[in-house]
Image (cartoon, rainbow, N blue to C red; front, side, top):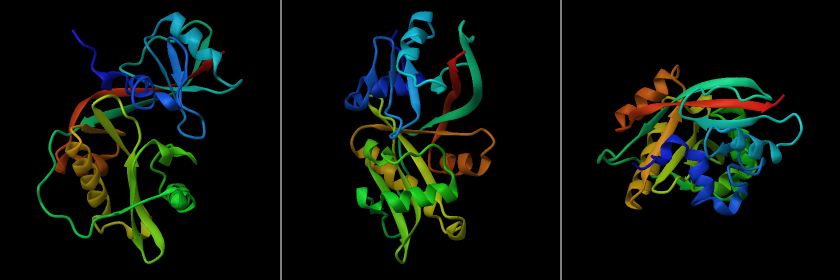
Length: 226
């Protein structure tokens, strides 16, 4: 029986399409901290946690996407537990969008960082845009909405940083951005997926309206050596 890569998305992303970014050990891996704050383990064994500890800066936690809230290994402490709904889509609505979003480039990084500081879509670091394709919507010269691709387990792409400036909400921008990225992924033969907090009912409802369904609950564990 094959293991679904979405049960351990960071591990399979770093072992696959993002291997060039990985700080890799046999049983643990990390993204560069200025790219994404995530780490991964191949399994929940003591050996995997030993590998994980080797590349963690002192006092730094590992942020792990795990299929369940696994027992805390000896010699480790837990600093956070964050359940997330993992949603996937196998088709996109066929209706036409308004003017398509624009592609964002490294030159847009300051504006992207400013927007995520205001809209707070989740972790976003200075080099996060290098992980995939990012798109946005401008109001005049100001970037008011954006979204992009982050994790890349084989055959899949995570849609992330979907956010809209508070002054620009209610205009359908999040839908336009998400739909554009869904279509891009599906055209490549990849399955788009995303993660959303269970209490973020508005976002989950939008994604469901676009054809996403809940695949499972994923738990983000923040853990560090004691």
